[in-house]
Amino acid sequence: MNCKLYYWPAPFRGNFIRLLLEEAGEKYQEASVEEILELYSKPVEVQPLPMMAPPYLHDLDHDVFLSQMPVIVMHLSRKLGFLPDDAFKSSVCLKLVLDSNDILAEITNLNGNTMWEYEKWKEFRQKRLKRWLEMFEETGKGFGLSSKSEYMLGGDQISMADLVTEALWGTMIRCFPDLAEDCRRHAPNVFQLIQRIEIRPKIKSFIERQQQSYGSSYCGGQIEKSIRSMLEKDRQ
Amino acid sequence: MNCKLYYWPAPFRGNFIRLLLEEAGEKYQEASVEEILELYSKPVEVQPLPMMAPPYLHDLDHDVFLSQMPVIVMHLSRKLGFLPDDAFKSSVCLKLVLDSNDILAEITNLNGNTMWEYEKWKEFRQKRLKRWLEMFEETGKGFGLSSKSEYMLGGDQISMADLVTEALWGTMIRCFPDLAEDCRRHAPNVFQLIQRIEIRPKIKSFIERQQQSYGSSYCGGQIEKSIRSMLEKDRQ
Image: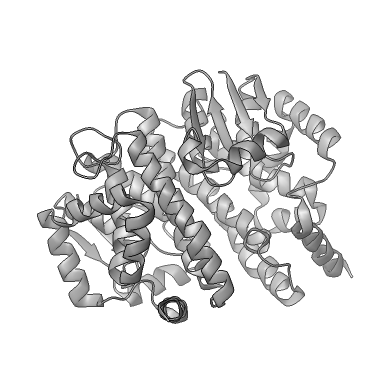
């Protein structure tokens, strides 16, 4: 398919979209920051679809725009064959991407609204982050995920649920390696799944290219610095 | 269909789910606060599906649970015939419910994380709330919505997009009547659409019953008081 992604040069929400396109072997364009800002700043009446913040996707095959990360992920998953036919599994896929969106908001202290304070961070890492990890673990186990085989929703092929799991936890752990231990402890089967996904050739190549471009950058800005300083305190 | 909703006794996120069931003429049960707290407090491994905060839906026909409001809304809309067949319109439906979720988070100052300060509130009402209203207005107009006829996504029957619009703006305006003027000014066709939806017999009856039960309560808690005190300042 022919499409153009409008997202900041950072992994964060963008990786949920990029991983689907990369695993499907699709060529896609990424808009420049200038193009993103131009579209973002337009009055609502002249936007191709009324949209708040990026990511946006321009589906060039149908010349339509979409916004809201989970909408784009559902659209691409359906088109690229990553969405399960089963209605309940498809609902679980949407749930996992909405849970992910909540987790991204939480780890950035409500999308960078204020910087982290250490007491709040400690509580987040010990309680909420742990529970979110357990939720992914138990969801996978409910469908037969084990340490050596199977996917998040069972079956014998990768689905949106696996790529969402990688986009969330895989990306987070690569950018903040201290959190690998949280994942290994609270979601051991998810941790193993991530290892299996990251050696798939197209994903491996994507991760290498992204690390060359962005290093260990996660969401950027002051809030990323704040997360790093919290992790530094945790190590002391 | 046979289902049970687990949501606090308040309109807020619950109305997105209730309005679908009411317009479809479905009988459904509402869990008591004790039942909600019991399910919410369970360790992840013994929940029927790993879930964070309500709303939850127990689909008793298939004995499955779902969480995340937009997931439940998509599931019910598909089942009850409110989801358009057209793939793009279906994506727009999902986008509108995700936009709504963002708006609910914003009007409650990030889900009640802190209470409103007046300068921040003024900026929210004048800029963000205005833009969100314009977005709904322009989305509808793009599909042919006018002041007297048509639905959010065109066609000749009510869809999920209309019920989401009513659940978001209709509920908000009923609970905070001062905001009716914001809607009338920035989204005049949406405002008229809400009037047409609210005289539909099943919706009308639901609204009357809800107002008898909850009065003008919106989301409850300290944050509702904070919104009301901001509106009071705006009136001075």
